[in-house]
Image (tube, rainbow, N blue to C red; front, top):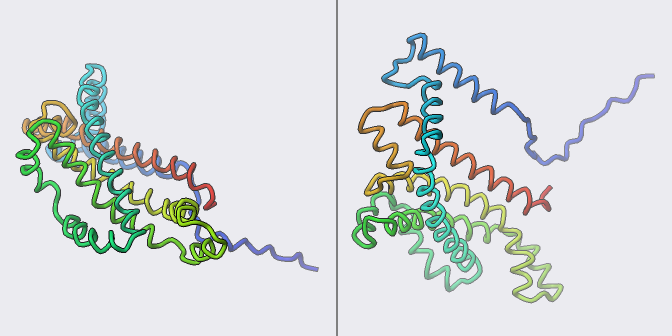
Length: 263
């Protein structure tokens, strides 16, 4: 008698599986291929520098103390500007999602601000807030504000209305429904929007630091580009990439901790 065939479980709901090490292998292979191409002459040094030279530049930056001299003001600007933009964006996005009057009044304004390239507003912010830190904070704040608003009220709109009606049928107060149903249900969408907002914040940080900043990753890249120093230029790009990956990892940890109920 044949043994019964085991049928694999199909109720995973397309949940992604964590496969450790694959991303690192792809990254290392790409770096090794670039290193080989530059050394063999297939890739011109005027197009791409050797990854080993970029790594040595990063080591020299660290040993000289210049890395932290440029990183500290950039992190400060990104933290202050993003905190202002994200906090205001989440608050207004929740209000738009909850109140029809607020939605009717602010949706047209947000829709008008959203497609404007925020970098184009930098000269205006310089006129308003000066060439120092104020204009940089304002640019990053506005750049993170609009996508956070859109992501937040979209997440509130997508909360299952059946759960809200169930809470009403059990006699929950308005505030209890918002705190126990709406906000937890909207949190995944808000955190997903936060990834996009912070990525935009990094882009605007670089643009802001290229105008009137002596120190910062954007100023460092601008100086390297003006001297056609590709090793320093790519070192700055690597630093920005590492900053983006770190922020994404932090948000992933927050999602894991705050959204355990989804698993």
